[in-house]
Image (cartoon, rainbow, N blue to C red; front, side, top):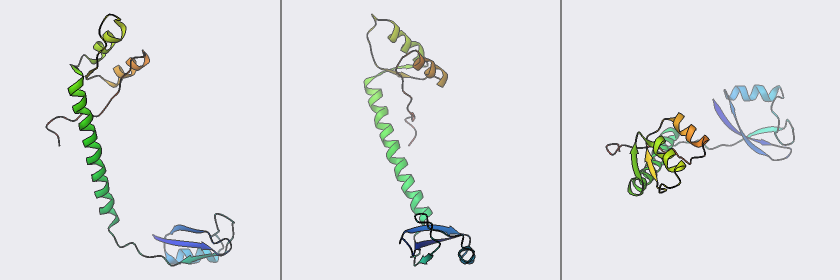
Length: 141
């Protein structure tokens, strides 16, 4: 595959397109199958394009790794906030959430714990506010 920067001689629009080879570009141009996206002109020329010499895959991988670390750190900060400010109810999350929601006399408090996706869906259908966040064990990096 080869990428060319193309320029319309009619309206001066520049755009990028991929071709299987340089011969394929020449063939499509000769058959008048290349046209401008803006004015539909067939007066399309290749313009010089500088090669990309960096290792794009490695750079993209490193950028993704950095973003992943940032997201994971934010989630760990949320997790710490939750542990410090809410009561852990373990596997009884759905029961405790309903108990707080429906018992008007019971003190409203923040809780966290474990619930299946079906339990969370049922809670939301009942109008009980719940959120799911990814949870990292303390042992995980």
